Length: 383
Image (tube, rainbow, N blue to C red; front, side, top):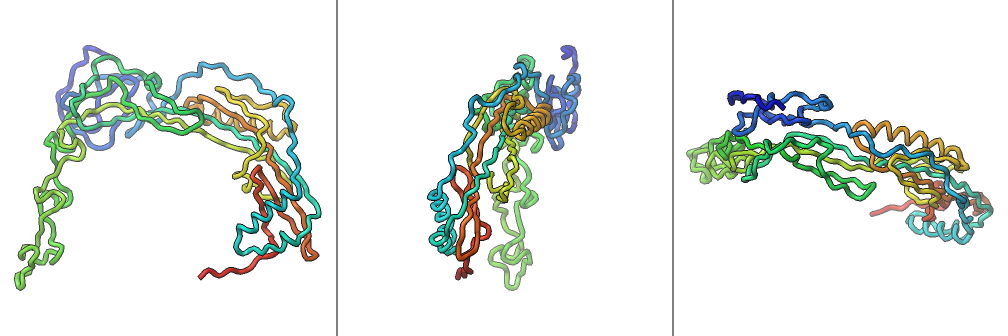
């Protein structure tokens, strides 16, 4: 920063009314600006490398600093895992089927009470889930009515965007926090009302009157409108007939405190891969159920899992980790990654009813049921 830089004469300008602050160049507020009262000129500071991508109306996401933690080593599979799930009993299958049927008003219960289970086939499958918890930061110029706060612009250099303190939420939960960047505040004249504290009423265009709602402005004299006394006009209720109202921008304070606002966003990016199963149950049914948790691991940066009996799990882990780190590592800081492997129970229950063979599926730890071709339905008419 050049301490010998001179002020330019105050004159009308647009977005450059706002001060330029080292590390925050490019933060521009939309809308035409008027000359500031105390803010320095925007061109008194040079551009800072690393902030060239900022855009009007907001600085865009700022590149995060290099990670301090080393990359995690390869992770083996869980030790001595219990890969099996207890088989579903016939009683459990019938109970789940009965609850399913009773929840449908158009389903008769004869297949439940009279049907005979002939076989039960397990089609258990794996689900791999990757969660990437990130923090991203962006900046833009902001303002508020000046209520006597000190302008701290010249107190000391402003901290870099990633040096500003912000309190993160619980891991793997979304949250947004807005922080006023220290040492970027200055006071300026309100650009909306030119420091008048009031602005023209938009409802009546400053006249203090509106068209009479009774005669629609006809202003008849014979007989005269009793509401407007034949004038065709009525007092504007928005401004109480004054033609002006309190400035919405400065709330009547006449001056604004302008500053750089840092927006910090924590976001949990979740993606799952379901290993294909050939039982005939649609995969989207499984997204709402839980399975038996076989493995869970959290690290700053995850590494593909090794040693699982089903290679599709390792392949999904490698693919998703690469995609997440490539996609999120450019504009945000990866704080933590978590991998989970579940074994989801799926059982196809074959049963016989009225000499015909039918089937339904019991899946998830919740024992949800899917029976697309239930054989005893009726047409219900709701009046």
